[in-house]
Image 1 (cartoon, rainbow, N blue to C red):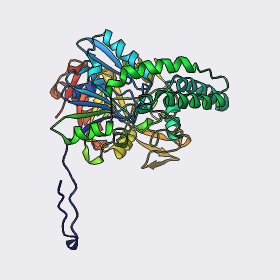
Image 2: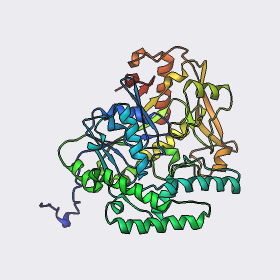
Image 3: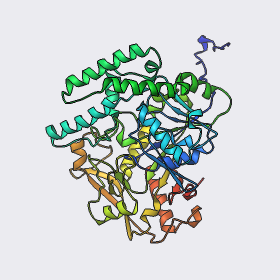
Length: 447
């Protein structure tokens, strides 16, 4: 391969290599549960490769195809597409029994040959059963010490990322190599946790036996993820899609800390969680619900603890896919969307569940925050400060008609169109899709 350098005397720069396939990214722009699965499903029908880059089975995506409802937690929801390859990247933490159980459940609903089109990065960290037990014990401990917990899904995600950061974690490549060495390290890690949590019981031999069985089942699916992604990007023309789990306000760095997840669910997590250069990131789509929801505890400025919140909760069936918990509900908050856009640089939004607002006489939208009577141009990092902000609302008239049968922009009531334009203008991001129902065909494409 010959590289031509410009003459250093001319002050010229070596041109950047702008070749290769671009990766399309779908990310949550609020606190999760925005309907990312639906947008991914829409794009996945045309994609060749669909990837997960962070999180674990704390994510929950529901996809409806031909009247069948599939639930995905660890598998990329693009696994439904029989013509595409699905990738679980190095940034994902994997509970192997959970992965296999999820695949079997979806097989019963009609998912076929998934193991032939799933690729697992050998650098991904493993979630053990004791990580899940520790997750629960830590929540109990927080409740006892601080009178409040984080409200984790108890899927072992936080403890696994902690093991990864403290360099005691075990990866898929370790499981598939020398099992004797793996067993020793597994026992050491279990002992470390038992020293911290004396009530923790670990069936070491039982878990190792189960892990050995899992290892043989996944062995054919495991690849070097970096090489796989490099080839996919630099080979023949391919459509590559990345589905983010969780959302901007749950990001470990940018979310409402400490009530966040343990990974980067903003755009940077795509590069580190798959091993791809920023140069190869193409369109970044943010998924936004037409109102706001949040699971668990933590500040929520536009929350409506009244009949509005209840109406959104019941009409929107706002119950967590992973936890079964009722979601807290409130008006759309544009401060959050502007903040998420600062971090992610969205190409466009998908606005989902517009139909839930069909019955409202009046719709409020949070447009700015005030602190001690003064408007603030930023999203507060400190949770106590965020609890104290006063939200400034704009009121918009409701459209009071059923939008669930709308399939084109022209079909939408004028007041619903005005609501959509209002969001676009205030955030400065165009809305590419509007969702008015559960099925694939309920997504109106605008451009």
